[in-house]
Length: 294
Image 1 (cartoon, rainbow, N blue to C red):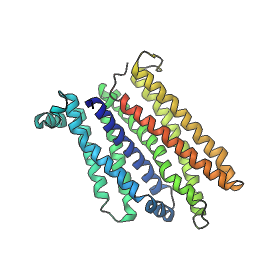
Image 2 (image 1 turned 135 degrees about the vertical axis):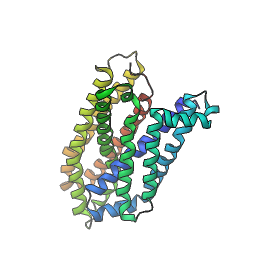
Image 3 (image 1 turned 180 degrees about the vertical axis):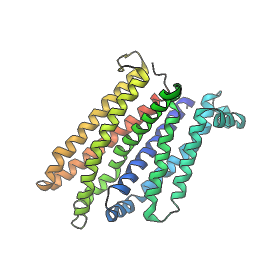
Image 4 (image 1 turned 90 degrees about the vertical axis):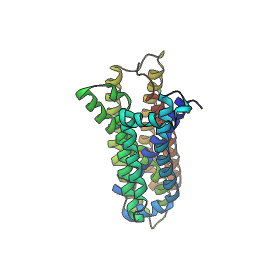
């Protein structure tokens, strides 16, 4: 495997894990009633542990893979001198240090009591996502423009991760909606997801527009450019996801009172479709971050 492809894969897995951890844990911590959040956490404990493990391993793997990509290939992946230079003399290295710190926070979180783990994972994943702004196209700018771009990147990735990640625990919550003992709390969680989702989608769209203008100064209309072509596909997928969210909220949710079985099935399928599209979007972002924005 080429070093560039390996680095893109590493970035994709790492970013996806952080986004799903951030969104899922923030949603369970802030918007889901405590008893229901505990129930969902127990149901999804093993998948959460797997996602944490992948996030930590890809954070560690990013250094040798990046060193190989900067150097002369895989033969330089474990070159101690080159790794030292990457860590301490490049913006990529500063970002990697922040990623490792976030990974340490997430690992230490697993030592906390069961009920507090999701709070710690929210902090660790949020820190990891915010540190992604230290690299990428924002680092090509200077002064206030760089800081403004980084702030917008942080807003974009946290809002997007909050939206996408919350879909993961939403699926078991929809399943629990059919249980009489969980119905009241599940309805509260569903309503809060909807309210917060409106804000998150609006922030994703607005910060995405700002990001495009900061990088390209125009819309991506040059189809001879690989960067603009992939960016246009990413931009096109966002309204598709937003439309699915609108259909879920304003078509299927009102069905719950009249056709509960059909409504819950439709909501679950719609949420799974949104998660699938979001994985494609994260993959596009992993590739876009390594292309020249021309």
